[in-house]
Length: 248
Image 1 (cartoon, rainbow, N blue to C red):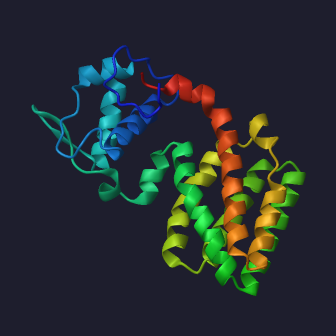
Image 2: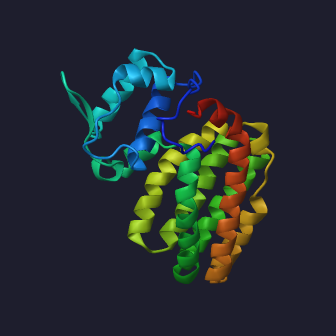
């Protein structure tokens, strides 16, 4: 059964006990973002949500309160809780990303990275290339020393630097919002052996070389391959958690 199926399916499987409030928030957010709960629509009752998600009433109340505070839900005493607006119109991108599943972020990040790399290859300056080369060298050194947290930090800075080199201010701003939350998410899983064992250093250097050579086609292709490699590792690493958290 698809991870994206709506929550109204029979015989639901309880959510795993992993920050349950966040899991319920993420689930309701997804229902709203994908239009399964439309603006003006009334949410299932607290009891129905408790039964369908396999969590306590307290967990449901906290999740609903958080989404109401974000402006997505309207809690009407004695009447029920209603969807106020879609996520994109109701809260900032940065706040939305803080609750997004990392694989969802990667699905959106992929075309951003590809376009940023292509534009950077066309528009980069010599100082851009020098800055990217420095960040990549520091990333490689941190990885060699086993300093995983620092390597993650520098990796994200490297990709943010490519977005800056695109000379597109909107793309740079959007990527900056992604970078803040991506850094935190990657730090949480970077020490997993399955993640740390995959070395994308060569792809990073190939990407920088394509940008330096002003080859937008190669830069876009390598960025896409790099993101696909990372996403494949994340899917394999997170698969057990996703299976536990899936609402059937």
